[in-house]
Image (cartoon, rainbow, N blue to C red; front, side, top):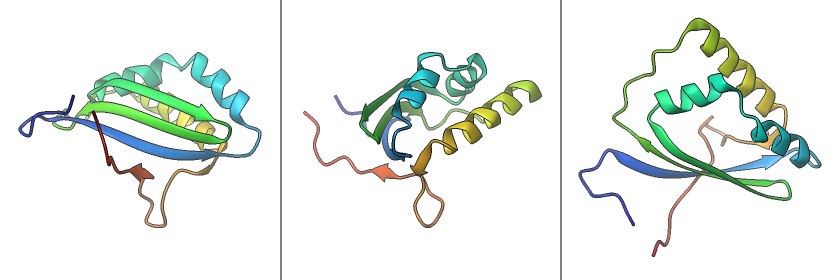
Length: 111
């Protein structure tokens, strides 16, 4: 199922590469994602978010409302989300391109 042309819902796919051997640690963190991170995701208009891992390769698929307003989060929640982001960055070899953009994957087929 694809989103209607006039819909503000978008499905996006990102690719990440873990530091070799960090998969079990990454899995452990994602088995218990911090409540502040979940709050931030929901507040950002994300309603479906799935991460797949094969060895050190991560494939992240999310569906979000691109018209969602900037989330209004408490300073404490923002601080915790920032801590989470820094923690995740230490586990990743590649998560941005040379321009600092996420490693988007382009959809080429969908049934």
